[in-house]
Length: 508
Image 1 (cartoon, rainbow, N blue to C red):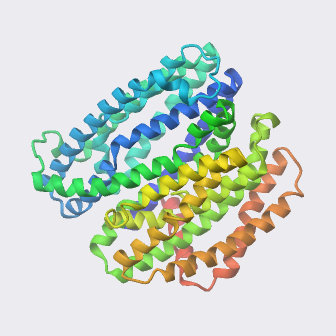
Image 2 (image 1 turned 30 degrees about the horizontal axis):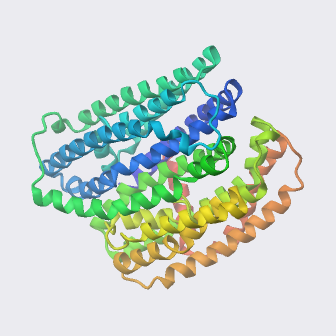
Image 3 (image 1 turned 60 degrees about the vertical axis):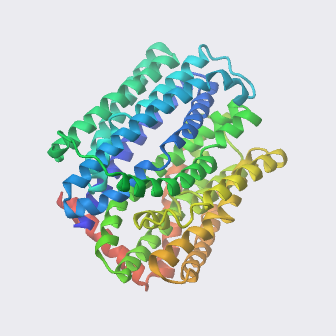
């Protein structure tokens, strides 16, 4: 049953990302061609500011999802209804706080932009971003039960329709008006409307939520708040480490640099969005697994998932390094290119530091087992190291220093603490078993990267080079992985899983 749900959720997630990314690329190209690069930079900057404001959520959603796995498995409707009411109350307060705090920051925008761009009504543009972000907290709480109950595909369908509708209207308005404000207004309307639609669908699957008069006891809330307190540090650390690059770029380099970086991040985020859909579809299944299976079975699944994650992370990192510049040049022109050093660090950061890279499976298993408390101080050290090293290295290396700061903060904290917590408290095993696997994988990854990059230098420019490069970036790393791992149980599991997915997808 778990594998069926993962396949259903993941296959739809793949389709969703293909459709979403197509419209996102078209929208971005039209955005750049109808508006200036300063608008693109402002888009990235304001998104980063609102990422910082998302700290208000403090991990409440993750804590409630974790607490929902067991009552869903036991069909404890009273407990589920209490959790949903708690979720509603909390997210309403968060939405109001984000709206108020975001508007309060409006007079201070000048401090975050080195060279203020010539954009009419810049403060109004920012306020619309704040409204859109705050609106995402209202009505969305009911969708959490679908995710916890392994029905991500329902939320994904709504997301597909939302993204297509929003992109089509944004493209039309950009072409007709060549103005930024209508583009933003469409985003706000779609966010509100489709949050309401998701809420209605949740009530159809779980009718008992319509008349909900159940509330959690103080003791139950206290237990959740303990998880929230632990998750708060992870939330803070994650936002500072991964959500401040554009702020630093804008403040020290300029908003134009944010625009250039945004194009590359559009490509990487498109892939990360797909991976996140897959990994998120795994979370509820992992939560079900750890509540029903033995430690040996849980570790067996972890090892196999980690191998698949390594294979995917290698393909993404290598492909991004070898192909992103070619794609940017084709879509936007040579003036929008970043240096190879910056692209190299972006690729390496994805593999080592990003939560959709090699950290993904360890993070998901740790979260599904509720191991939030054991490394609650880690994110504070990680974020402090990230900010200090990024600012210092920025003075010596410029743009590259910010990315290197992110890498160093991960290597000195999360890289060794997260697996230590999972293996010690989750698997009751020595963490050296993890590092043996990780370093072997990384040697194969580095060799694959080197060979692929050398072959890519021989390819012509233009779309033909991109198409041939796509094949090479998949074929070379995969060949090395197959040669090195073909006799392992992880590889055998992966092949069986691929065959099962293909058979079930074709059957559907």
